[in-house]
Image (cartoon, rainbow, N blue to C red; front, side, top):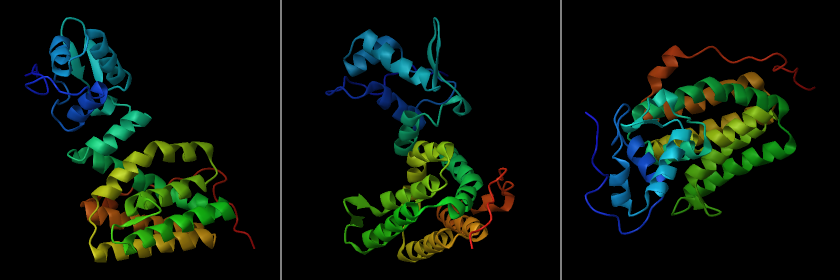
Length: 264
């Protein structure tokens, strides 16, 4: 049965970003795939805006692959597989609004398991001194944030420095597409980092696994870096309850020329 009710029973006192507000409701499961959003006139009443403003917001969700407009029926939510999850704005929405959706979290994690060990291998081969400094700085800032009462360092949280650590590894591959992918995945990686458990024992274990990954890259040990990246993800999987994914790991990525002989 399609939903025809406005998101709230009264007109909102402020004017939010309508596309973002609707995206939040969709990611939170208030409008399931296959269901219809409230009618345009209902949305106009709810948000206190003109019909052209509502249509512009709906078109943003159409462009994001989240809605389809059906003449005479309205705006229907598309299946999750149709959403443009690597679109920067959709990725940002996903990171902020998708916590109630375990499928999205699981699929993000499975993608990371398939890709990040390979990124670590490439980083161990191609990282420059500047890359190694960026990785080490992020790791040290994670430590400093943990030691601070508010778990912040240089104005950023421990979780933000954790994301920066993984971004630096993607950048150290010196492959344009992989580096760009890290920018698109940044909110998604942040989502998993933020929803992981944060007990003292778990954080200590996680930091040691990150340290081993950093050292393997610094010592230019591709195999060790790959295994260390898997170890980091295994900790994340334990925290999120996704450890079963490691029983069915996909084959490791390999590209021609990816394994350059180690220097020395």
